[in-house]
Image (cartoon, rainbow, N blue to C red; front, top):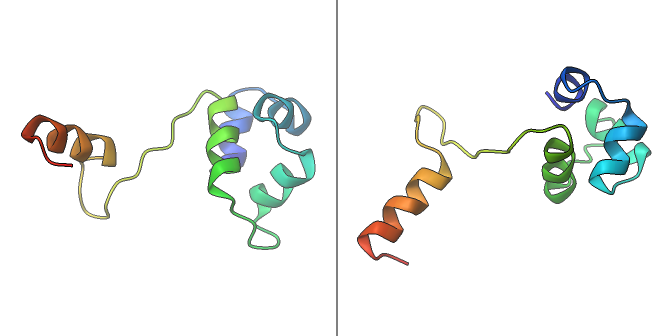
Length: 78
């Protein structure tokens, strides 16, 4: 998915890594998951660099984590 996001954005690995503030080698590893390297913070920055937002959705549901948190704020939950 990360590689597809980068290519859809027309970015090289070097360009995307620079925009995200991560090493190109980190991006390359994350695209191939060669060493199981899935730093969430790096993944979020890389997706943002390609113009994407990361949304957390519970399997089998259509509401995102943002939707659930907004509902809790409206109800006054913490």
